[in-house]
Amino acid sequence: FLHFRSSLVELHDRFRDRDPFNKGSIKKSEIAELFMELGLGGNDSWISDLLESDEVLVSLLANREGVDFSLLLAVFKRIRELKDGLESKDLKSIFQMYDVDGDGHLTEVEVFKLLQDLGMMEAEERVQASKFIDICDIDGNGTIEEEEFGALFQKIAEMRRRHHWDQDKQLAIQIGFSESQLADLREIFHSLDTEKVGCLTFQDIAPLMKMIGRKQHPKDLLYQYDPERVGRLDFRRFLAFMKEVMPPEDNSEADD
View 1: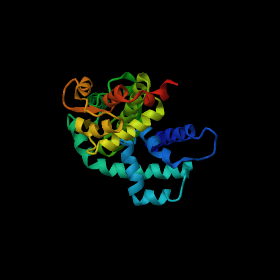
View 2 (view 1 turned 90 degrees about the vertical axis):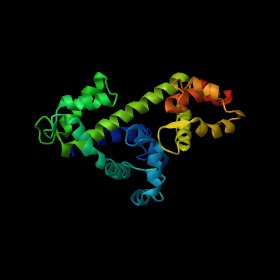
View 3 (view 1 turned 60 degrees about the vertical axis):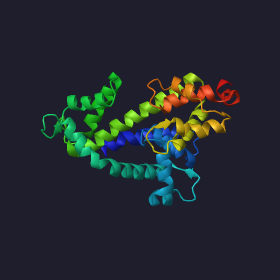
View 4 (view 1 turned 180 degrees about the horizontal axis):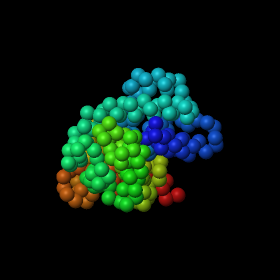
């Protein structure tokens, strides 16, 4: 319960942010984005697919337009159960990889090595990870054992996804997109990313170019956003590319 409590508080805060008039509910269509902001899924299309395909979730949300907090909590717990099941088979090998001395415990130093390998080098991230260790260290011995590692790894992964989500949002605003445009572009990106690898090939982007009136595939322009010339764009480079190629009237919303 202790390691779940902090997530519960943040979930409630996000719920209240989306219920400014205190109606006691949010729209069902807002669930996927809310959970993505919490770092719960790899992308919002993965969560959306679960909401439509998992029998338990479909039953929970059947004939519901408004979602109160108790229902949101039930959906949250179910998605976490499904996500834990997908990741549990990898946790043992990850734990053993960072248990350098093989004593069955992860010290704070060993956990920080995991953060480093995940590209999480900021002081704030290390402070937060130390708090996670305290929360997940159920037996209070100052280290993380294998049975405690699942909860810790989940918190670290969710923190990483939240930071990526926030960085995407900051970049989008910086280059001139509104939040609604960002949501639309994220949905487009995930629909084109059929392999779910987090990148789009130039071939993936070609149909989109036709939709916005580009008759030719602008490879030269694409390569400006793909300096390594690997033929792929991640989401942030996709945002910059779309700002360049979108018709002016599609960009006007952010400038108003």
